[in-house]
Length: 87
Image (cartoon, rainbow, N blue to C red; front, side, top):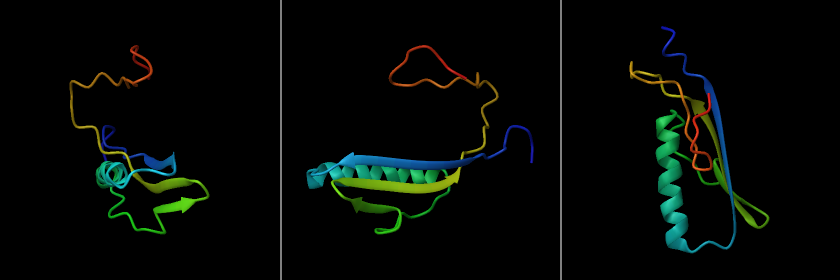
């Protein structure tokens, strides 16, 4: 495996307070499933990867970060909260 394809382990936990309108929950589920596919977690299973805990809906799954294949990648991560890149 090359240095650019280390595929680091990733754990994702997304928690949102209930109640959530069904259409919003469906949209979030599609988004989270897309993330799961990106990291190789496969299909999320109700009760295992998606469940209700008290007053919250919880998505929880693990996989591996995709291999870096863009040679022009600067190695920076941009967040919605900050405009400055972080490493």
